[in-house]
Image 1 (tube, one colour):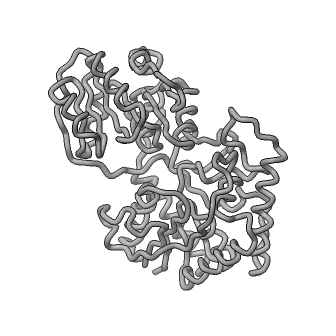
Image 2 (cartoon, rainbow, N blue to C red):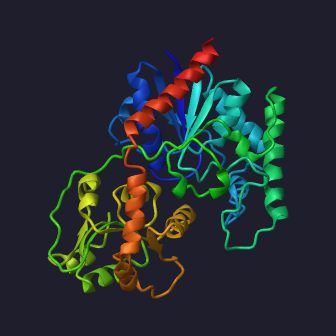
Image 3 (cartoon, rainbow, N blue to C red):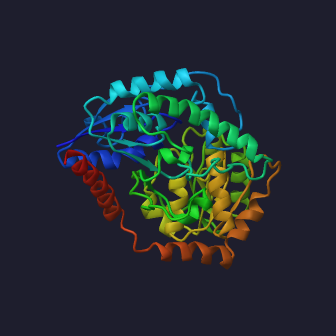
Length: 395
């Protein structure tokens, strides 16, 4: 059996581990030796099955970010030292050392793992929702379409990264790449749908849909009220939390809202009314079908789950990827979004508009389009693709 490394290099939060874990567990069950190389060793440590998999720290670059608001993926890589030839060389040397003996790499946001795998001539795959997998164009497409970004500026960022990366590839006898997207060409397994892909210019791609997601066990009853049933998941630090709760209360929307770490006084304020603020994770798969609409920040998993259940969304993004997903959902008519910079947002109006048949119909159309999607079959296809590459390498 093969030795497979699951790698995460850039970004934060537990989503990277939860993306890799189902495939890692499946590979382990098939007799392969699996191990994690993780940016954050504690991330996802409490997830079911994670403790059974060996983990070690992933090599990472530490330094100041160059762009506060990167305009494309090339500029994102500048924030992690990828335009610095010496830094890239040392980073890839560290990854090569960690990958010794590996037969394949399965990564989530780990460009260095793919570069190192190329130098070692071992197959690598990127499992991603797509944000960190730009198409192989020069330059990588702009992320902030609403901000001026000349082609020359974007191309300069990409070429600086390519010069540093190609110097390392060539030094190890590997072929150079022509675009940043070439790092992932033929290696990407996208856990999304074309409608949610933030790169609409990608063209044909391998879309596997969203996998089964871990969820809580709480199944509270819906509060009493005259308004729609609203299921939500918001961060406790969201600046618009109190105004949103007030709007839900005025509408008497029967609301179940997960908000970990919410202010105790705020929880008490709404206790017993139509809005119930929860600290305990709920059984999303059981409660989503009962709801009329969903409120969230635009995380990929919750957005996809909501649409697969045929529920329109009110999306309140707190970071760029969420904002881009929001724009995609708004564009195909299954939801509304509120820009985080908008003062005194009219949440009540947005919530009322979302009950209109046009939004509901678009969300239901998405659900019908992918009603036959089988996450287990998609996972089996992904495993088959990796094992086919392993067989070719062994031959």
